[in-house]
Amino acid sequence: MDLSHISGALGIVHPLCIDRGRNAEVWDEQDRRYIDFVGGIGVLNLGHGHPAVIEAVQRQVETLMHSAFNAIPHRGYLAVAKALDAFVPVSYPLSCMLTNSGAEATENALKVARAATGRQGVIAFDDGFHGRTLAALNLNGKVKPYKNGLGPLPGPVYHLPFPSRDNDVDADRAIAALERLFEVEVPADEVACIIVEPVQGEGGFRLLCADFAAYLRSFCDRHGIVLIFDEIQSGFGRTGCRFAFTHLEVEPDLVLMGKSMAAGLPLAAVAGRRELMDAIGKGGLGGTYSGNAVACAAAKAVMDVMSENNLREWGDRQERLISDAHRRWQVPERFPMVGKLTGIGAMRGIVFEDSATASGSEHLMALLSAAREAGVLLMPSGRRRNVLRLLPPLTTEPDILNEGLGLIERALETLSP
Image (tube, rainbow, N blue to C red):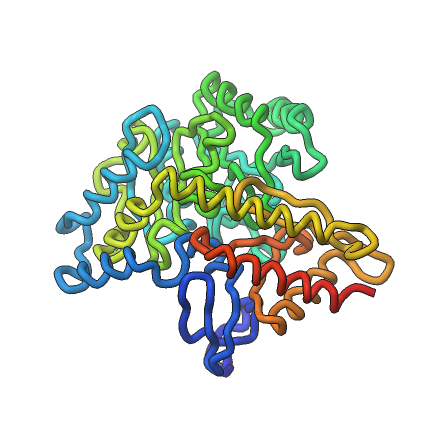
């Protein structure tokens, strides 16, 4: 694979070039088959080439490829906005803006929160990830490889510990950090928004503590702060329901969407309460490609396919099969580097622990290589890159999913002493 014309700043996990894909299977240019547990980093919840998406895209291409919605509206954008109002489980009427990417949705959410509150401060969380554009970068709760060497970033942004059953931070510790922040760093009436992932993606597939989520909701209500849930990776069925915040029983004021929203086509959104979304003056939101007609056709098909029954069935199946495999792997004398299972539903991570011979990150990097040789593609996450994140399509056939888990097991056997 010739990378001589590609920026060296792009980190590539797997040194191969994919030629074609079908659901959870992909083939490289040498026609070697792999089972794909990366899924475009959470983009392919419906797999490679879902028939309903292909049909919708082909039909759309024959009629209209694109119209810049803020110049000349098209029906696809309107249809997606209406479908989102029914698809996103909030109690209020939803107002939205479609974007090209999750990072762009994040940037526009910051604009909306600033305009609605007249404030500038933002609170984010350790190990969070919200994108690679300049303002989004400062929200990320991790320096390397995202923020080092770039100098001051747009702010002000303040970070808190992320409380989760999947780490050693509980709700009380996070609440104490929040209270300290307002006593020492910034007054509450200068904070525009709090942005948090209900399940951290890059941070290691960690579920936000429900008690802390409820505290955040009441705290934001008391102080006029906009609560933003970033569902770019955890949304559109990844956890076995439409959006992960359902598990927390808390509604956001704004929700960020992307990744699996259009099954591989570039489409994302920021959506929420109309009074917030209307706070910016006319013309303040928009974009040339935002809400492209073909991407909108794909997104509408995605929402049609992702019924509650389908999501529940897919999520329950993946949770069961992954949990069963993890129990087999976690026998200490068998694979001592395999630690706990993180996340919820079908959004699962596996922590790799340090040993006398290698760090957890080194163990995981060795697994990625061995698994690739065995025929399954995997992806790391976590601050130390020691958490295996499992992102097979929700539509993966049970025998293919079991085969992929078996290939991981075979790779682990090659690494064990």
